[in-house]
Length: 272
Image 1 (tube, rainbow, N blue to C red):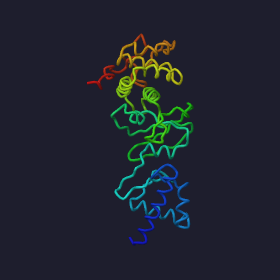
Image 2: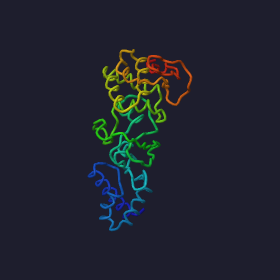
Image 3: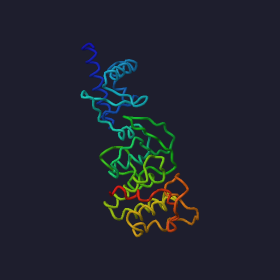
Image 4: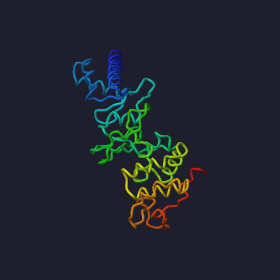
């Protein structure tokens, strides 16, 4: 590579990085917005694209999806996280929930390869560093319900929403045992958390989830801790399955109207 080529690549890298910082997403490049600054350097969009391709070949830029890149420093590092990319690439409103949100709130020690993002429109997913970003369309209100944090610009579900979603949708990658551990950790931080969770469930979720949470919280801390869920059980005589989508067998908890279709000891195994 000639010195001229190296100089032009370094100039392109610097130009793109400055543009990303000005836009509030350091190291994340969006072609539709940031290539204009590069065009002023190169003189044309064709030359800009060619220069970005050279940056990719040199390992200084990585394509995330069409029209989106992360910049890589000289040591081979990139500061952009998957959450930062979700914030940069996802139209508002949206909400990161389930496993990734449990990690964010330090409610689990597990790493989840699936990141679930709720959105009011149908969006195509993508992958980043082996993590799959999956968009799930919902009619729920998403604006104004996220956790406020300086750690990431991404909209992260509150602990209550995160736990409720995780138990309500086992296919989103969080196990029953992990939900129970998250409940336990939140109760250690705030003994009144089950009441806050019950308020969230009453407003946005169904009777079946209230019953499941009642069983789990009772197993973890006794029925008094789960008292706020008792009025949320509904009148249906059909038993809810503790593990949604699991087997139809198992004893019936008559207080909660829940079929215990998995070994309930998993609720406390994290304490061992």
